[in-house]
Image (tube, rainbow, N blue to C red; front, side, top):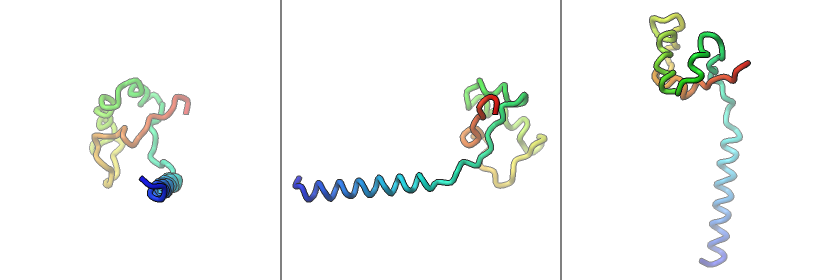
Length: 89
């Protein structure tokens, strides 16, 4: 490979990396509510995600006390978006 071709590839790589960095830098802040570390949720913090997600619909469902909004994404992947809050927060 000649030097001109290598230079062009390096420039393309640098521009692509810079564009990706700028894209990620401009990403909006995380706004999804975290799972509170309170008496109701504390038991789920030591469970694996998939096991804990099976319990969410008992309290957060259509017939339960805290219904989900109509435009809420799939109900079976709660902990994909809702991260666990740190103890004490």
